[in-house]
Image 1: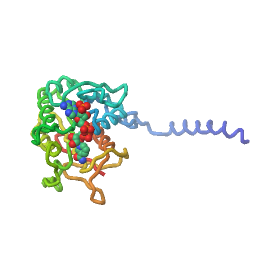
Image 2 (image 1 turned 180 degrees about the vertical axis):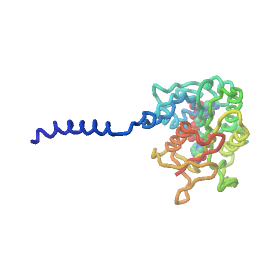
Image 3 (image 1 turned 90 degrees about the vertical axis):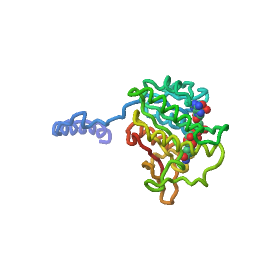
Image 4 (image 1 turned 45 degrees about the vertical axis):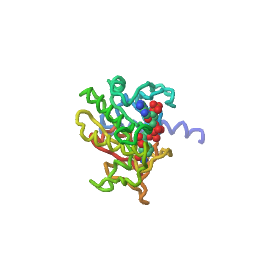
Length: 259
Ligand SMILES: NC(=O)c1ccc[n+]([C@@H]2O[C@H](COP(=O)([O-])OP(=O)(O)OC[C@H]3O[C@@H](n4cnc5c(N)ncnc54)[C@H](OP(=O)(O)O)[C@@H]3O)[C@@H](O)[C@H]2O)c1
């Protein structure tokens, strides 16, 4: 008996399956199929950086084709058959235009402090923001979608219409200029209506950490957890950026990501 059961069980199951299929209402493939997001061709500026490299990894893991840009492509740490590494300058509109033409989306996660100036308008984010807007405006209706990674402290609001930033918290010198430069970029994008843009403000604290997949997204108002902390790991922030690429929720708008 112990030997017969394993052979009989599948036959019994097969009959039950045939009977249930015959009795079941017809279900079209379209109704039952899971809709997969369309795979995209994405350019990522800052692919060698802490945030950008995580967005590269997340996009590749989800099947997208990525072109990572760096002033020195050997600095891009990832190796993947769907990753192309190219040299480019995010502060030069001609360089941007030549790289992004024909792509679905562009993500800019650039950083670095401009040691030559304390003026936020001269900061690397501000210079890159102006160059991206110039290049994508030139491309007109052929412009890919743009997501710019910003800085939380100078771009988020404590409540609708009330800016969060406290100038006493912002360091002086080139680092402060970079942080304030994110605000310059947001102001610039808010005047753009010729291509689809999103400005992604991280939580107030963002560090390398864990990929949990459990976070919230919102608009311009800072998100805090039950303890009042506004934080996100770079890994979870990268998930949110690729989610937004796949399922556009914040076109022509600011978004934030936090626990
Ligand atoms: N809580 C927050 O709000 C928060 C926290 C962390 C970071 N951030 C922001 O996120 C952004 C990225 O930070 P991160 O830590 O990832 O920076 P990072 O590690 O210093 O990386 C900076 C990236 O910018 C790229 N880059 C700089 N100048 C470039 C140019 N002319 N052309 C092309 N690429 C250029 C660099 O590429 P190459 O040097 O290879 O060319 C590098 O990949 C920063 O703007 C930062 O302010 C915000």
